[in-house]
Image (cartoon, rainbow, N blue to C red; front, side, top):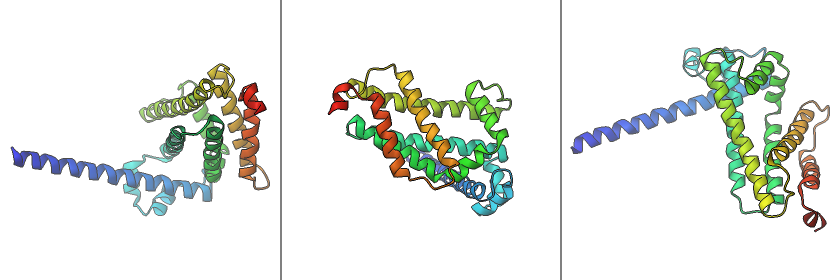
Length: 233
């Protein structure tokens, strides 16, 4: 029995090492794609460019990503999942809702600033943005199995982000710091303010002062969310 357990243990370790290797290679590919697209733009970038930047052969690249459209999808999912992990870490911090809102805004808007070049490339490519919008709203354009899987993962990531915001707002209402508005309306308001700033930031002629903007947005949101007693304090 002991030799069998030993063989099983070795097999499990090999499987874990292989999974870790594939995860690291996939992350390297996505990082390389971000660099290439940020440098050349989405339309001008090719899978050859990404393979060269990642230090992989094209054959190896295609073992992980089947084409440029899938690469774009994977980048978007990667961003959402990464940001969700960051927001989840903030939510467990033992700070008051007002301070937590500032932390959330800093994380979201600074993350967006870091990804400004790649975000601009996505937005300036109408074909990809139309696909993302259609898939996010109805899934009607998810014709292939790859697109169906992407749509499912996109919706999961979007729901997770909405869940993070709802949890934060629910805590603020329960503590008496925030007004008891319907959560759906509060989430929509918060999301609209953040997205509006993000789009404005991408196309400003001058470089934005992120820290100053975050402070102003924080104060603006609190004017709507804080209870009268908290607003007067």
